[in-house]
Image (tube, rainbow, N blue to C red; front, side, top):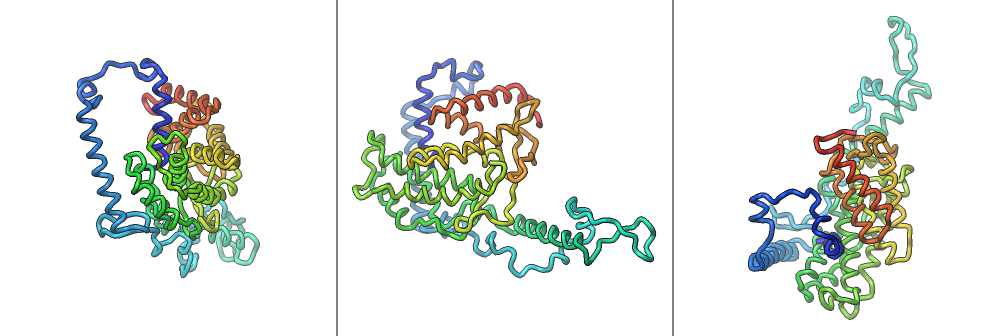
Length: 396
């Protein structure tokens, strides 16, 4: 339903030029299940196509009837759902108890950044220590305690399962645009484009996850714009006569609101979340996954080329190179989570699943789309290291 639909056609066109031998990576005989289910007879393909359309329209029509213009349909309540304003990220610091009631002296003493110098106190056995109450050391401890407390509250009281992607921008409708085009419903497609232009606005005081918004919202806007303006009209004449690049303007605005995640990072690795109106949240966690930080170059790259502005693609490529340069010196593998502020790996388990998968995917897609040989060189080396070290599992 989003930009990966557009990617699919590009990838298929490319794969069509390859030999069967090149595609058969593992070069093994087909087993019984693969022989039985490895292809669709034409009649079954048409049947499954109609089933897929029915499932899509069931979800799409239900959303438009019961949830639009909110972000998604809550299937249990059969009503619309947007950001969790009862538990929003930016308001979690209001009416909180004193940090002294939460962070104990023992926790302060054990904090690596909160070590006070030892003093001998009258009446205490020699060698015991106490934290000074009226010194610069104590003031520093209070600052550390307050910052860590706020970060703890932010991480534990923000409903990120909802707020990471629901940003009050008609998410499901935006996410459905390219599907409507691909299945050939031109009238509903044009109606949906009109609704998006009339209702979607990104000037919202909401904290969202950069990766999710990139692939689902930014990618959808860009790919829909491309489908409408493609002179070859692969899905027919989709563009309303009045269309004047409005979706591209929305994409430009959204991408600009994501840039603080990159601009606030000294490592080149973007922070995982931004406030669409205010920029980088002051106490947002800096822990991000490799896939989240390194799966931006396709959308940002296409946007840069459509706008003639290299800034967006430049930031995304800088993030990829930063991650690549931090791979393990011995194995060449990457970890699955990293601290964007320090560039240190937090998760040292490498793999092909969640947290890493789309980083490799985007390297290859970027090469297919833009022809940048550096992307293919990184993908090829990563693929080689994966085959070498991941057959039995490996941690960097």
